[in-house]
Image (cartoon, rainbow, N blue to C red; front, side, top):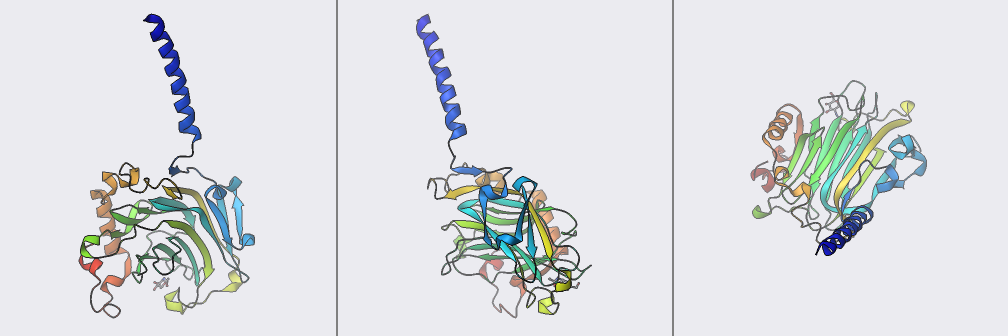
Length: 297
Ligand SMILES: *[C@@H]1O[C@H](CO)[C@@H](O)[C@H](O)[C@H]1NC(C)=O
């Protein structure tokens, strides 16, 4: 008996080591890439010469000049999860420039897309952050806020949380936009298609700043924006198909299913003090209020 117990202990030691190796050497279904280098999760999709890696690949510089803007995309697509990065936008006169950070299903007919767009401005005038949500091919859900800080003075964290209950766009942990799953009321919600993570920096002076009145000043070029602390946690596709519906993924947890009281208070503060445009209240565009606006924010 004693001998048996002894060998069992030895056996279980081996099991422990074996399990240890499995856990740490097997790429897990849930991707947790923190802190990641740029090239671990992303590839350049537009103009190699306009994206420079810094700090051993842990940060990048995006360049916009008269020749080109630039862009990058995640190597994988994801179905639910959270993506965040720290961004420092173009300082000074950034009018006519747009930096975007978004998720996109790459399926034009039935596009799902979650957008952050940072619209530059003349020196001293506030940047605007536009968000939009496409679900099953239908977009046109723009909202705009002005930020309560200068986003070009320092890095700030921009994140998109996406689970079965809602999509939450946040700036430094402050929710600025919530798109709830209102499928019960017939409002489409993105949940069938995986999405990649994208970013681009380009000139859009035909619409971006004061509706296109303010043109880009190329004398100020090149323009630089900086990104770092890339973090994607989600169900990578292709990957185990059970991942996306697994209720034990942290981003599906009870504290992520609705805004907690503190987050809800901050969200109200943003809407009261910083909202500058909301498609929900644009009677000219939408004489009939869109259903997701009626269903409550
Ligand atoms: C730029 O500044 C003007 C003037 O303050 C403001 O009306 C506008 O909303 C700002 N943002 C953009 C993107 O035009």
